[in-house]
Structure formats: C-alpha cells, structure tokens
Length: 105
Image (cartoon, rainbow, N blue to C red; front, side, top):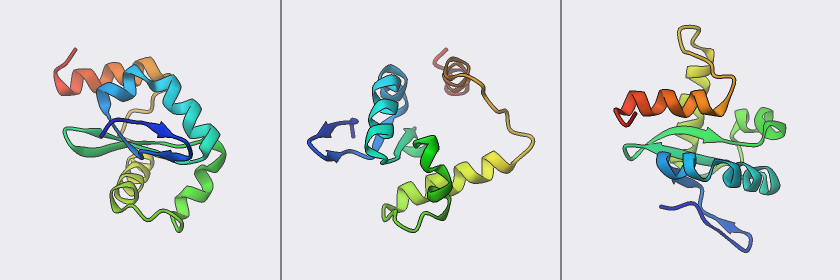
C-alpha cells in the first residue's frame, strides 16, 4: 500500500523502495503527525519510522492497534538490543545495506 496522506488520514505502511524514494517526505509527515510508518520488505514488516520525540512512548505501544505495526516495533526493539547488529549513523548507509541484502545494489 503506498504511503499517502489525505487530510488527517495517513497510510501506516510503505514499501522499501518507496520509503527510500520519499524518505524526507515520510519523515516530515511522521514528525508532523506523530504517527509511525512501517516499512515493508518483501511483504513483511522490516522497519518503523517514528518521531524521535515519541520513541519512548512507542516502546509501551499501548495506543497502537495495528498488529503489523506492533510486530514491527517489537522486532525493531529486539534488533536494537542485539549487539551483533550493525547500527547506522546516516540514511544513505542504511538504504545501501538494505539494497545489498536484497540483491538490488
């Protein structure tokens, strides 16, 4: 489902290619609305884009009802805590690694 914002209604999922293409627009919208967006890779939740200011409240995930979003957040939290996983300091390195992982580089 493509990322769209229509009035106050926004899709909460986006494919990896579209996330890369429209990253600035998506992050601007996420920060403005406070709503996280789940990035899908091969039709599975892969990452969640959320405003940094609300990350601590998302950890509790009490207000989030979408099971796919909850699963993606839980998965992201597990990866974040795993010291063997690579942490990225900029978006370009993140997307380059994703492309290499999927064979699209």
